[in-house]
Length: 467
Image (cartoon, rainbow, N blue to C red; front, side, top):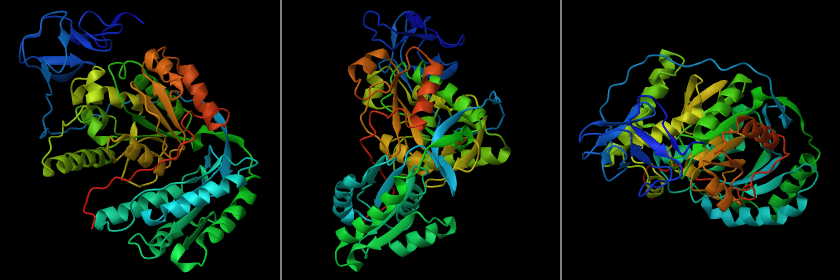
């Protein structure tokens, strides 16, 4: 790449890639004099206002720029999205009689309530001896909720755990309850009944004499079947990728996010699906996404999601622009608008075909928007719970976490790729589209294991009272 980059001809700031004087690498500098009060423009869009006179060549950042977000903006609909190039692609996955193929052959142990986390972890530990044949792992997906939550929180923890159980990567699922929690087993069974799954079993620890022996007997039965499953050629129409960024920096909107956007377009062009979330990190770029909605109906659903999330902020007494994080700012991101404009690049140029509620399963081929916050683990869990078999996670600072599906770390710059080689799966600085797409296919086919796949974590989006 060049030493500096100007993204759009409308911009009045450029980005220094190697650093220059007091300006750190990945940060902005003025392309011309910017008077106090004038708009600062990047990506061809407004990212804030100058709070003081800025001279040509000077560093442009939080010391002289503030957000220009308007919390009461009126939204319109003016469709503008491209049709992806139609292609064919396949991967080797585990075909499911009840839905899309899995890219992993795993057994999940899901506690209905945090009280039985220890029992589930003990089961998972002792069940490792059962991992053989094509089984990729047996995991306890622990969490601290399931009791003392009220209203929407109680409903949402049930929806989330049931959606996790329906992920295509799970060959078998064991729900373990206590027996007296709000998130009771009967309600979970009722929720899952319409899906007619024969790969899920349930028990409450209070109902059996020896919960460990009881659970191990079920897991032994699961493993005996799962180890015989084989990978087969599967069309990309059965793949759904999750789109997430975290620890962003000044390179995010230049390298990793646009590169993932190209992968999104290729996936959709091959008949697959993608899900974009992080609603607060759409603020400032939401109109661009609204114009990509394929119909007025989808636009209205998207607009409601944005407005509801803004109201969630303001009713709690916080401005919607309470972002970016300290790490984002250190990396060169000044305002939420700037972060958002880079963030939404992951969606590519394809249409938005649907808007999903938290815990709702993906239904449409194409790009869907999902109602969830920006927090890395909460958002990644929500993506996987909506049916993504893999999450493409772009980062400029690095992170070792993984949700319960493979979470591929894609670095925005080569420095972090080299420094945290044990975390990063792909260096996007060179913008190698074919290389990243090939890695996606290899990961989906089990030929590549993401560096964080030894970790399986879930997190719940809690908004209300806990008793």
